[in-house]
Length: 433
Ligand SMILES: Nc1ncnc2c1ncn2[C@@H]1O[C@H](COP(=O)(O)OP(=O)(O)OP(=O)(O)O)[C@@H](O)[C@H]1O
Ligand SMILES: [Mg+2]
Image (cartoon, rainbow, N blue to C red; front, side):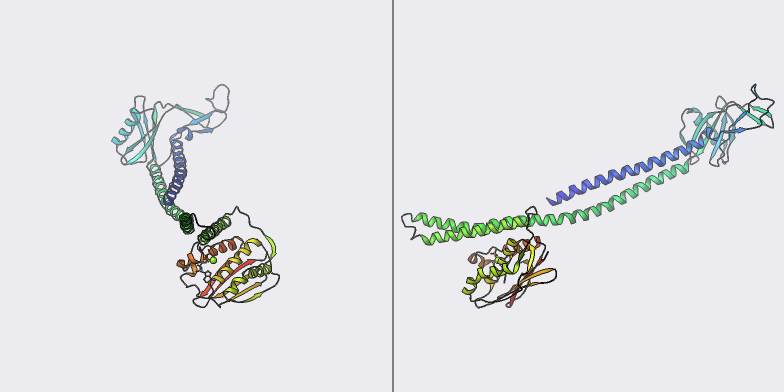
C-alpha cells in the first residue's frame, strides 16, 4: 500500500518537474532560435545595410525644390560569411561578389536553386556548408558626389547568400546541451525524490504497522476475559436450579473477566486520548509532592500485604504547571508496577526533587529486574517481559506505554534503568513551567 503511495507521489513529482523543465528549456530554445533568426535576417535584409547619406546642398542635378538630395546607397553586406550573386530579369548571372573560393558551377547551382524558389528564403547546402539566401530587386542608384550626380542603372536582382552553418551548429549544440542537462537533472531529481519519498513514508508506514499490531493485540487480549465470562456463564446455565449463593464462585470469575475487560478498555481509551493531539491537556500549577503522598497512601495496604519496605525522599511543595490527573495516573502506574514486580519483603525507594527548571520523580524497586534486551521494549504497547504470567496478574503491558505517552505529551521525559536481580528504576521529569 505504501509502495503504491510512494510510486504515485514519485510519478506526480517527476511529471510536474519534467513539464516545468520542458517548458523552461523550450522557452530557452525558442528565444535563442528567434534571436539567431533575427540576426540572420538582419544580415540578409538589405534594408539594414541601406545608408542614407546627406551630401552637399547645392546640386546641379537637384530637383525643382532645391532641397538637399538624399542618396540611397545600397551597401553590400560586407560580411566575410556571405556572397552575392546579381542576376538579370531572367535569372542569368551578371556578377558574383564573393570572398569564397568556390567554383563557378557551385555559384550557378546556388543561383539556380534560389531563382527557382524565388519567393522562399530557405536554407540550402553547398560544399558542406549551409546557406540562407534572400532575393531583392536592385534599384537604380543615384550617387551624388561633389555636387554632381551619377545614375547607375542596375536593373535585376541580387541574391545574398549567408553562411549559416555556425548558427545551425550553435542551435544544434544548444539543443543537445539542453536535452542532456534535462535528462541528467531528471535522473538526479528522481534519485533525490526517491530518497525523500522513502524517508517520509517510513514513519507513516511504521505508525500504520504499530496501529495494526495494536488492534491485533487488543483483540487478542479481549479474547481471554471474554472466554472466562463465556465458560462461567455456561457452568451457571448447566445448574439452573442452584442458588446464586452456591454459584458465587462462577459469578466471581465472571466479575474478574468483566473487571479485566474494563481495565483493558479504559487503558486503551486512555492511550487513544493521549495520542489524539486534539484532546487537550491541562497546564495548571499543582503540588506534585501531595500527589505522590496520596498515591503512596492508596498503596499502603498492598505494600503491607507484601511486607515491602518503603523509603521516601520527597521534597515538599514541588509545584509544576501540568495536568494533575495525568501526572497522578503516571505515578500510580509506576507505583503499581513497583509493588507488582517487587518480591515479598522487597523494598521501594521513592524520590521527588526539584531543580531550577524541572521536577524529577523516581521510583526504584528491588526484584528480578529487567534484562538489557527487554529494557528498550518495555514502553511498547502490550509488551510484557513474562507474558505467561500476565493472565494470573491481569497485566496487559499497557501501563508503561500509557505513562510514556502521557509524559511526552506533557513535554517531559521518562526513562528506565535496571540491573537484573538487583533493582529497577523509573524516572520521569516534568518542566516546572
Ligand atoms: N518496576 C518494575 N520492575 C520490574 N519489571 C517491571 C517493572 N515495571 C515494569 N516491568 C516490566 O515491564 C513490563 C511492562 O510493564 P507495563 O506496566 O507496561 O505492563 P504490565 O505491568 O505488565 O501490565 P499493565 O500495566 O498493563 O497492567 C512488565 O510486564 C514487566 O515485565
Ligand atoms: Mg504495569
